[in-house]
Amino acid sequence: MSRLILTRRRLLGLGAASAGSLLLAGCDQFDFLGARNDPVRNFLERANQLTYSAQRALVGEQALAKEFSESEIRQGQRPNGSTDPRNILYRDLEAGGFAAYKLRIIGLVETPKEYSLAELQNMPSRTQITRHDCVEGWSCIAKWSGVPLSRLLDEAKVQPTAKFVVYHCYDQMGGGLSAPEAYYTSSDLIDAFHPQTIAAYGLNGSALPVSNGAPVRIRIERALGYKQPKYVHTIELVDSFAKFGMGQGGYWEDHGYDWYGGI
Ligand SMILES: Nc1nc2c(c(=O)[nH]1)N[C@H]1C(S)=C(S)[C@@H](COP(=O)(O)O)O[C@H]1N2
Ligand SMILES: [Mo]
Image (cartoon, rainbow, N blue to C red):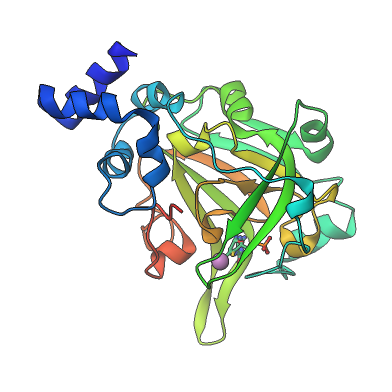
């Protein structure tokens, strides 16, 4: 504990007094992550400048998103955004019942990996009932099941220089007058290794439907809806997302949404 606080002090450049108040405030502070000027939130946002080992050191301090009971699931998860990807690769996978689907882990890892849906389903799983908040102003409580992303990242062995995780999806946005752009988003490693972050293949006790991101979508439970990528085919560890899309770390982020997108 004291080592972590010291690490924070060093990272934040705080004096002894403010480090002390951070310590006294303890975990309660994490309940106020939504407040934009919260010092801990500001600290975490700066954490995206940190490398793997520094971010890993902070994972244990993370608050969990609230979990709900079965009786609080009042309706199905409302499909939003892409609900029926037209991409030919995706159409073929869907026609084959996703038997040929692979989830790839690439980029700044020691051992690039790929997993079939069956392989993911045979790994230790986690189920959680959480609330999804879309910036459009609606929420849904739903039960998600999947493999903790930390497990997949540990198997691929994240390289020390990695700072972000980019989630690449099959569906394309835009079209019409604007050129199609593949949906993608990204997170820091703290959110990627967070215990509630899962590669989800189950929704409310059934296989994840196409409308909600089949066969695999990522749940990052402390983030807004647009940070919950559906139809994910590749997870890429990077030290910068400048080379993707318009360089802001996601499709909606490229179109002006906040990168962190925390709730
Ligand atoms: N690939 C992909 N992921 C996506 C989107 C999308 O259009 N494509 N929309 C996002 C938005 S804005 C929301 S609110 C949620 C909707 O998830 P749902 O359809 O399961 O409710 O997915 C997010 N992830
Ligand atoms: Mo959304």
